[in-house]
Amino acid sequence: MPVVIDDYIDPVRPAVYPPAPYGTPPSAGGGAPAPPPSVTPGRHWVVDDPGYAAYNPDYAALYHASPEYQTWRSGANRREIGLGATRAEAVRRALVKYGYIPGLEGRYGDIRAEDIAAAQGNQFSDINMIAQNYNLGVNQMRRALAARGMLQTGELNIGQAGAEQTRGQQETQALNDFLALASGAVSEYTSGVSGIEGEEAGFLPEVMGGIRERNPAREGKAATGHWEQDKPVATTPPPPVPRNVPTPPATVLPGIGGPRPPYHYTDPTKPVRRIGGLVL
Image (cartoon, rainbow, N blue to C red; front, side):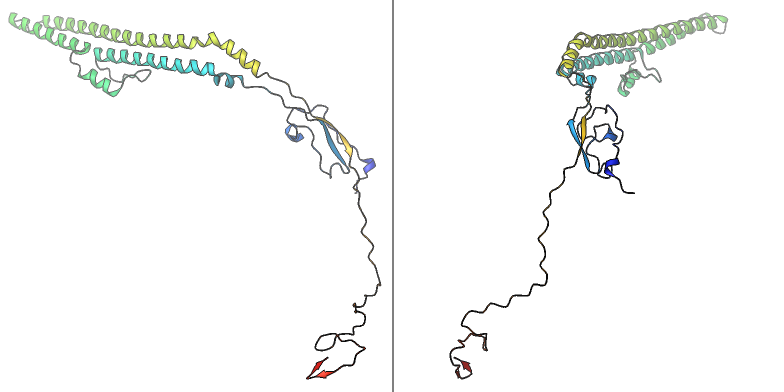
């Protein structure tokens, strides 16, 4: 059924709109723009104050983009890379000194294929020297027992067990020495990195204070307005269309007759002469 303007009731609008830039539709959290005529016929919404959106800066992003942080971060990265290179070199030297350990992988990827090859090829590594000393001691013991005619006695077993025990103790000590060197290198690295990262706490409050001062947070302000009736549009009625008006006759010059062949005018007061088919 048709809508009666006088009986039209404005739709219920919330008292406070969520803050948003002017022109944002209400469905997206903004103030009310001019509603469509089908909703409010004969009226339109007039914005008194467009309001503004709330501003909640991303302070973490602003801090990490600040020149102060970027300068410090760049220098810190260079120093930490240097510490990492020192750590890796110490771990590699310890591995080559000790000898190859099957399945060993560095925590930070310090052990490369060439480092493993160097450890395996080091004939003077701790593991190789322990093995050489073990073999030399066992051979000397066997020769001594053989010279005394006791190679098949229990003395061989006792001497063999003692040599193996000594070898095991030496290998354990060599492994502990390797782990101590590697762990010490890693500990120095982590301690150095921790100290560098701790420097940030010294300048962070001052930098963040400046960022917050330059980028203060604010609450949004809702758009406000009011309804107004549309103004009537002035129209000019078209001129009346004349009816039953006879068509005016063609204009005839005074003293000149109508056209005659061959399409020229003659004076009706003068006689007509024809010469060779021409009217004079």
